[in-house]
Figure 1 (cartoon, helix red, strand yellow):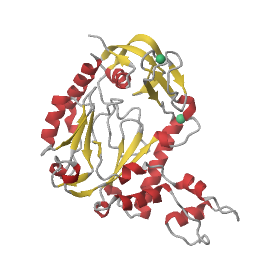
Figure 2 (cartoon, helix red, strand yellow):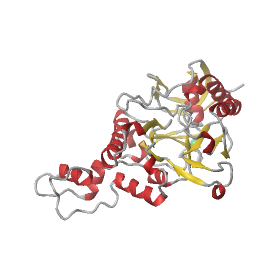
Figure 3 (cartoon, helix red, strand yellow):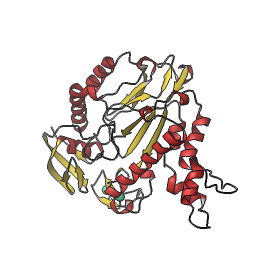
Figure 4 (cartoon, protein in one colour):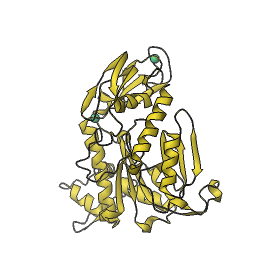
Amino acid sequence: MTLAFLRRTFREHYFRHHDYIEMPEKVESREFGYTLFGRGMIRHLSYKTSGELAADLVKQGPSSVYCSNATYSNPTLAMDEKGWKGAELIFDIDASAIPTACQARHSFWACKDCGKIARSAEGPGTCQKCGGTSLAHLPWSCPECLAATKDHVARLISFLTEDFGVANTDIAVYFSGNRGYHLHVGDTRFESMQPEARAEVANYVRGTGLIRPQRTDDSANGGWLARMASAQHGDQPPKMAELAGAFGSRIDESVTTDIHRIFRMPGTLHGSSGLLKAHVHDLAAFRPDYDPVVLGDDEVSVWVQGSPAFSLKGKTFGPFSGEEAELPTYAAVYLMTKGLGRVEG
Ligand SMILES: [Zn+2]
Ligand SMILES: [Zn+2]
């Protein structure tokens, strides 16, 4: 029942709002894929037009929709027969990768079997109450975490524009639909780069493998040398690891180096939250717990297994512990996609 409800809700969303979907350039050369609720991934799909894709989404109501950053001669063939032509440069920054002192305080695990809530940054592995192993991570974010994640996005943008000379207009920033951000770089200089070259870009941005220069030059007018010089206080040169922490952007390098991946499509719903992978036009003003909430607010009766209090669209819900609740659709879907709520009938 719950899976059918989710599927129906997503189908209705795509019926009404397929204009949210951002189609990539060269649609016909991209590989598409999606997952259906309760089922695995279907990939190696191809669409000729945005209308064709929208029609399929309305028909299928997928939990998540993906598109390649690469273009291929034959996107529907097996990977080694597709004929790789090039790929946009992509970055992924997830809140969980950014160390904040507060994370342990507001990170919860909920047992999908008995509803017990445990507070911990690390996964407990098994439920201490029923021994179940089906646990949902509820990494509730706080203002400090949200600000730290944005700060790493801003650092990445500064590397791209200042160090690599990428035009701001070639950088598209998206909220991932869960707890992070994706950056799509349209600058064609990166398109033909192989994974090794992308790894060097990723390492540079993260500050991995920085080597202390013979001497820090105050006249350095850019790059890591200038960042080092700005961190120099007195005679004591800063440690390389501290520099990487202070200036590097904690991107996921495995995402940047993978040139055959399919990525969540801009303007589609995230299957683990019901939130939109939203285009962020003003990073400072973007509200990740408000702006990507696009599902409706019709009230739904949900049985909530267990959940700490959470806020969406300026409203706070819960905490819940094995009880029936009347929730707006977006909040009900948020719990259901995490396996913590269900609907009957
Ligand atoms: Zn349990
Ligand atoms: Zn926090």
